Image (tube, rainbow, N blue to C red; front, side, top):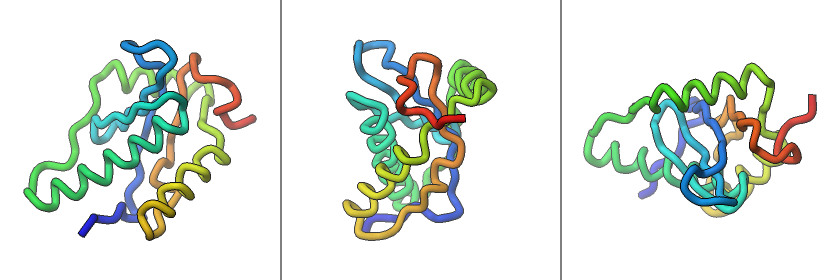
Length: 130
């Protein structure tokens, strides 16, 4: 049985262009040091959500450690984007959560990504308007 992401779980995430593949994006969860990748910001965040679900399930089965913090340079990217108020648009996150809920058959709260920001290279249409 797949493990559900608890409503009490919240992860800080930084979205940035892939350093290896032009035109691709990375969504990096800071508390778990997990990444999702996609052709656009939405796909990268959706991919990360799937990776987090798999990690939760695996850790419960094996009783392995759950938290592994991302490297310092990712935290720095996150802090810079947060200070610049580069939050991902709520409409985009709602679409991602809706897709996840349809796929999973249960409700994932949009609060899972409580603090998700994008670096300066992220397209403005993916960001919340201030």
